[in-house]
Figure 1 (cartoon, rainbow, N blue to C red):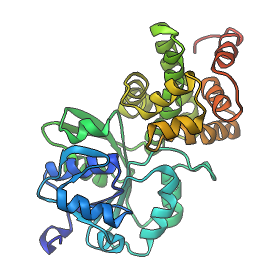
Figure 2 (figure 1 turned 45 degrees about the horizontal axis):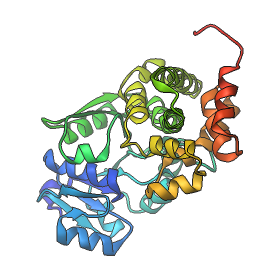
Figure 3 (figure 1 turned 180 degrees about the vertical axis):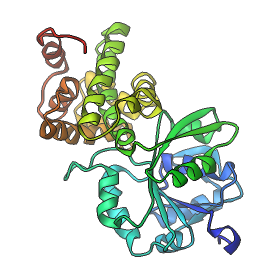
Figure 4 (figure 1 turned 60 degrees about the horizontal axis):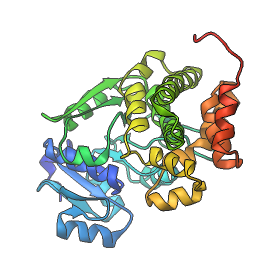
Length: 338
């Protein structure tokens, strides 16, 4: 149980997958009074006994100050700070479940990435609608792999909030000698970067799976960054956000390293797998597969040109072959880079 002395500064991480577990481990390692909640009571019981998450991060030992909690209401009411780390498909439901249990001083952050499929809303829009303007909100994003965070390898990411105090406090709470958090006020830009980079990572995986080489990969990353920025600015983000950790940083990481589930999905699709087969073979949630539809729908609604994301959507949901998608991209009319 969290003691009254630490309750004001404690944090509950909601979501015990690889990313939630890694962030809970990092928060505890940095000195926070941290608690990890997940949906599966049996799995949580096993984590409490073994002091590790054997399914998602078996090599990461839980620090002594990381507690495990199976009761969601208890996790919410005993901690001032909440960090939601569930897949985008479960985000709205999670916020709905915690809304009635929030304290008067609660602050809510999330590390969930992606537009909601049904509504096309970003997480901050969902939380604002469900929680109103009484709760400080923040988002965490950036170039991070869960296994490396959990292992204590050097990492940097961004904490964005319109509440400067909350952003600074959360950044300080998670930072230590191996983890550095920067702050931002551009929630929209940080969220758009996290959503679009997953789709572009599938494109990078497809390109590499087809043996198109390094030239094609870097062109795809660069032009993908332009697409990401166009969409973000149309939604109210600042263009310079996409030059930072949550934009270019996360994009390059996810497109170039095989720890990325989305990149691996692209490799499988290039080898002839369907989106269902690729997701099944990877075995964990692959946000880009689900996000490709919503990113493209939002771009269409905003009138934003995103040809790479369009072709990924067509490959995944319209049966277009990767080869034909490349032909469609390369045969587009020539234009100014800017």
